[in-house]
Length: 249
Image (cartoon, rainbow, N blue to C red):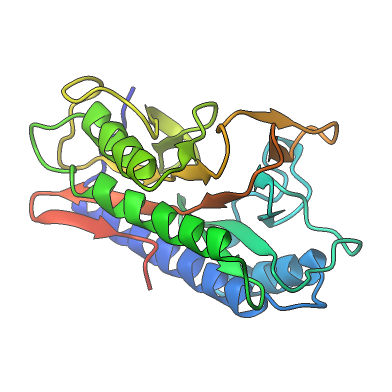
């Protein structure tokens, strides 16, 4: 069941989103050669807790860290580690959530570690672009399928592919709520978009086939063919006056 939010709840979610966005930006600023992913995670956790919030991901389903940090062919759910040291040319996906006053924020971005390849650069830009094409579809009378269709068309036009196994989702009192928000779809199909909906739109885009698998650690998702992957996400509220990117700072 889709949980619609009222104006007061969306205002709280904007606060949760601000903390989330700030933590994500901080993580991105720390991406540079020689830095461990564990250090980035610790700084993200410190910021979230300093703001009076809790890291949404810490302990979620047993996840052992406050942020998912995934490098190169890792798509999502990478576990931060003292043994993972960033190097020049890496592309680093950081996914962050903050729980504040009963509501979650959820946001992700892909950061360049120093100078990256031309292919990696195009992939990162295409992933952000397809997110933008998706949110353009958020208006009364449209459906979830319109969002996914616009995302996938944009991805394909740039010569890349979407991950179909993992999708966006509703956000609210729970980190993952209905509806699912795939990065593909058929226009005019799926749940109808109405004011009060709050969803995380999060395209995951690959240079290869888009097929993925989960590693033996039970979390880290990587591309089947070893191709690069990028990730971009905001928590988005639909209101009578348009959309609000709650996690944008």
